[in-house]
Length: 424
Image (cartoon, rainbow, N blue to C red):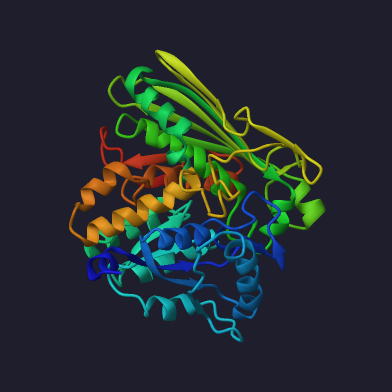
């Protein structure tokens, strides 16, 4: 490896060692479509391709790490050729430490990167520690749970000239990105949007450590389509008022988790140029029955000059086997089946989301691009405030008997929300 190649590689710390990072949950492989994980698998493959270098994983319970490393060797190292699983781990294998990420971050340098996949209420503190060390950050959606925390991270990122992005991979789905471009190109002002996203009941067991405690199903799943909708309308329309309703029963009776089964947010938007009104309905659930696909997900969009309808769960590609029965499969997300022994999922939108972040960090470090370029191309902390405003307003509405919550802006033309107001 030449010095120039070495310098172009990005050192990355993964904070969080659960399902999305390693594919290992409660002592075994995840039952979801993330059985090999996404974060570690992608970053290991990016190292094989010369884009990342030193890797580290930080969790809270080091006593799980020997089992996780063994599982990753089976799921990744033994499954694909030339995958180097060498990495540092925090805390030690005999230690439980919820603050281990601070020690881990101290071993990285300004210009390095960290990827945060932990319960929602931990994102803010972890991201802030990284930003203040000059480390670029990618945070799983939602970035944080409150608009105040989001604004604070935005200000700290600007002050430290650090890239902070949100991992919302649907922006890299070719059908979603095409729909977004068509919405902006030819469908006119916004009129109506409906989205539905659900996962099977066993996810409540997977997420039992935080479900209903540190977050809810709206933050977890509605965030996907809220981000897509916001991205499609960015600078042209803004959300004004939010009302939320929830359904209960299954989580409490079957899993003893005191949280909503299904959450629906109804949001009033205003088109800034025409001052006309549009309505959005975002619904998410984690009590679905097991079916042909892990995640049911679809949206319907109506503009003044046309409409778009996508069923992302059913792409016309099905598989029937003695092992798993009948499935609707989606290798456009993560292709896990090897090609000639090698991992071949580089075109999946789950993979491309991380690669785009790593490429941006490398280009920023090499001074090939400015931070403003990232705002135009990536879901950055400065361009996603509306998403957090809608999600927090939904939670406030639920906690106040579904009362409407207004999103406040600096003036009539601004699309940067500054606070939320409960309308009683």
